Length: 191
Image (cartoon, rainbow, N blue to C red; front, top):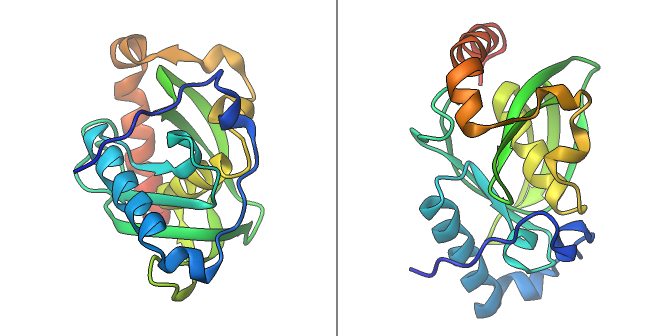
């Protein structure tokens, strides 16, 4: 198990666009080790996902997994998904506001508009092509992680800075109402 250091906002590497990975690189022991390290780092930090730039690697790879996550107990499960060279696009105009946090922005949360329905095309760690539709909170998670590959952190997408809060204040003043809002959202749109 290799847990890497997670870069925090302010580190210039988090603001750079990552490069695509060739199929040959993807098959290499070095990139396969990076993917394993991303999984270990994400799980150790209780993240719903982590992107390669967050550990200082400027390649278009992210891992996503939600499995009874203590940081995001309202999120429906997402099996471990390795996303390489993603292309993500909204399917329609419907959006929702998600209260997001980030391993690279410790102890903060803020409301971010996200598309409800997105199409995601990517390679998995074996180089197999995927073309999927993701909905609801899963769509939000994919958008958040793919943003990192373009040098974007959730703070850039917060439209009302008055929604920014520490985790402690979120838990004290906002958590119950937000969890109920997300429960109703998931019941309406699914994952």
